[in-house]
Length: 363
Image (cartoon, rainbow, N blue to C red):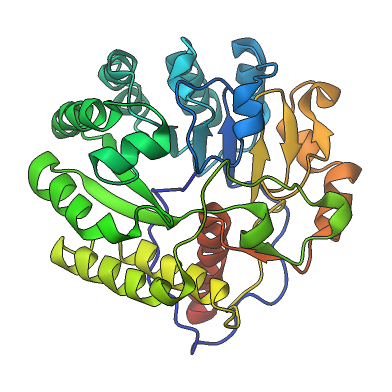
């Protein structure tokens, strides 16, 4: 669940402190779980208990109401579970393009269901509405490692074959793009460079990185009464003494491939510094304020490390009204001192600082 459309210039901790004071509670980005169902059982999944026992899903009509009542969004990251297990993903995407004017709809997928992915791209919804569609496909190591972590033999070969088709589709459809994201963990960190060479040289796809996350080791300062204790099924961080070297390896790969992901490298450095106990350049500016999480059953949370605080059904699936509710204000008041390594919230906090920096420069 990482927003690929929000490209940022690197932030230097030597600059003035732009994070003081929280932004107004105006939604810009949403993480939307379309389903808890999944065709994989990945070791690094934080949500494995829901995946093993899927709950209710919002209907297309309810999701359409959600799209039409929410203020126009910068990014909707559709995730799960595996989003393409729903047969109405194209309809939901169109709801957000047409009724919400969402700038970028991103689908986070394991990349297995090629026919459904192709059908969505070839529908040309992005071009029709002059918006952007992106797929973030997960690959978590070389073939043996990926198949083991994802608990599905043969999946690496199938997904890389599908990625080659998606790269061709991106060349034919200018409003669509695809990127691979690798979840760096204790079992794959030594494969970062050889995997990068395969994906760049043989598949031709751009490649970003994240560190495995879990509530017990990736978040600090969350009040106990709102803390959501979700951890991976069977996965952890690389050894602490390897973290700085991992960042340098990824920095080198990024330079070699043309610097497409400068922002991700900067973000990864911040995450690594947090894990190493170094001071954070900011607290979370965005969770519950400019970004929210909507689970497949309609429950709403400020972030994935905190418990849901409201349900859309109690607001007639009007997210704008829910976001301005006393329940939302109460939750924002509870999370004023937390920090985490969750990419979506690091990224959107950096976005807020960049906007403040630009505003200060314009004065």
